[in-house]
Image 1 (tube, rainbow, N blue to C red):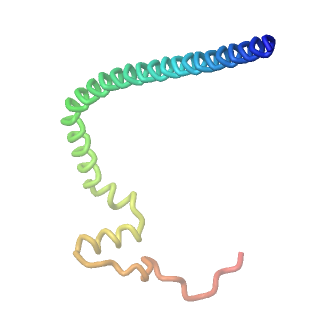
Image 2 (cartoon, rainbow, N blue to C red):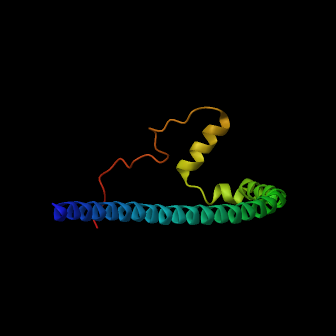
Length: 124
């Protein structure tokens, strides 16, 4: 009888030790997860702060470049308005479309700029 009580107490002690080990292992894993989450959050906060500073510098620089952009746009418009670019660089179809747009009418896209030849193709 005494051995049965001792065996029961031994089994109870083993189960309490196992439960305590399991509980402490859970606490250890939870603390490791919390540490990893806090480290990731700190890294994200540092990256966000660094990118915020960079974005501020870029925005300040872009605000000074706004006037330069307008000057470049005006130069491009002036060059397109020169007759050499309109007459030499554009094909007959493009000129026909531009002239129709300048006249305020919709171009007929079914009419080709150059008519097709009437005869059969010449043999080489």
